Image 1 (tube, rainbow, N blue to C red):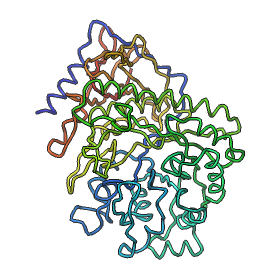
Image 2 (cartoon, rainbow, N blue to C red; image 1 turned 90 degrees about the vertical axis):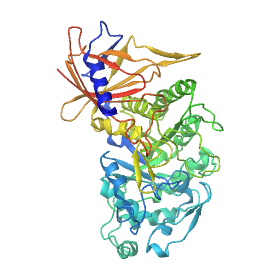
Image 3 (tube, rainbow, N blue to C red; image 1 turned 135 degrees about the vertical axis):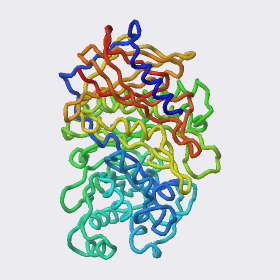
Image 4 (tube, rainbow, N blue to C red; image 1 turned 180 degrees about the vertical axis):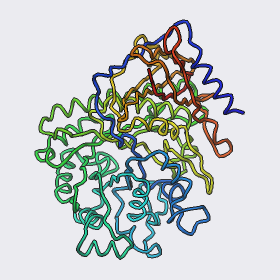
Length: 512
């Protein structure tokens, strides 16, 4: 019943052309920005909370249906996203991870303590073979975060040899542990947040350490893309200093940047996942939209280092919503995921598309059960979050050519002293010639109209995601409260008019 009502409402909103359209959508189809790399839709899998344990890995003896220890329901859901790349094993955890703890027979792997995330037990059941086999089954590229904090250059070099060698003792050891063929390591990062949990190193100290590790981080066959651990949104000078190192330009293909959206901007009181006031809705929108200026600043920084390789890229390998835990004593980073998270995801993806010429990869934090997760699990039960639906709706943008977009006379969303653009748009031409449009209405209260006919489009069809309330979400009792509904509109006498409900994300194909 709810699904039919939602679909009917969406059809009504999109089929009835109003007397005028408030916003004119302009798309320049002749000047593509660049290819939206599929890796922009990357995922992040860190050992924290119920990730990977229970969220992805349950073990082959679990009563939860699984294949080689990976739960089937989660795998099927992730497979439907066409996950392009997975970053593992951290995050902060990467600088405590010693890869030999996670190979060999399960019953001989040591039990460690995850000191960086609440002192929780780490059984090492999900290790090198489990991760690389999981990524291989998904068809995802691998992004390995090497241990700089408590590791050594030899440990890192040995791991890469174990993974990729076809001959020698480490290749034989891998085969003895059940894997005949080498794996492909597509990306490596050397260290993580080296200005913080990764060692509180100065930029100059880290640059020397990076150069040392990168010199020996070699694989057999194709070499991985090497990524520097860069700044967060508040310390861009850190990355600038690292890039000034005399050898970095020859030893790196990109640099990372981390940016989390906190509703309040205060790490001590970030804001609630649900039941929040509208002031925290609009502050969330204002803060997440800073992503655009941050990326622009990174691009300017690259231009100031002309010795960098021509395809040197920005890797936003941690981004997403971060809110307060329900209990301060909870060691997990489990948080409910609402339509607000979905709108944040859409806004950021549109920003990444607009910078397709420089942003080579992003990794939303995190894959299952942690922060802005795609999926939540509770024992044998699983639920898809609103963020999951946004990434699934945006799949046509993977590998498409991003096109410049402008919204003329676009409305503002204002509350008190805070004002943000109500609407965000992204357009792209897919490899098979389809013109795709993504539209986000970040206004918590009002619907807004867009005239999408200025460049010849006469029909729009696709799907829309919206929430009845600001914190509308899916849970295990009501898993489909927020889900996409099909929409279709044709041009009338006044053109192709799209009406976007408050708190919504829409993806359509435009045709003439």
